Length: 217
Image (tube, rainbow, N blue to C red):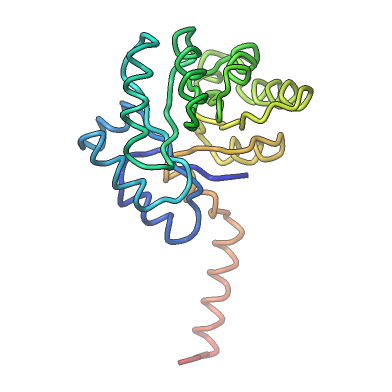
């Protein structure tokens, strides 16, 4: 499973990139606002660092303007994935932009039927939102399972990009189901390393090193 980092904070991306933990990046207007940077400037900086897809979202809601904005975003770098919402206009924009050879990430997916439409419109990625489904009492992981089944049934090449990841369990469950990609904030990705038995074992080793006065250098 590929790891995308869900942030527009360049330093956080760079830290994970050094460890080989970044296969791509996802951003959205909310993350750009949080970073306090110009969208074109920060997106270009991220694209220069990361080889994989970098999702940059349009701001318009009508198809024609989405297409115009998408083309503008695509000029930033070859690894831009134009992000459009899962609306009828978004699907129209997806069809045109993907037909021109651009990567397109169709976001805000909350049903397998929506995911089916996005695949038929030529989406490179479909972004189902797990956490937001859970927030309203629905099973976000069941949505990932349903999309996986539908796509596998018909050989769609659209990649499932599990989004709105809130916990390490979300990451593991998405890997079990077979999501192609997961995107999560840096803090969630870094927390994957944590386990109480690792901490306990390390404490024991350090105590034994101190008691035995073991030195390597």
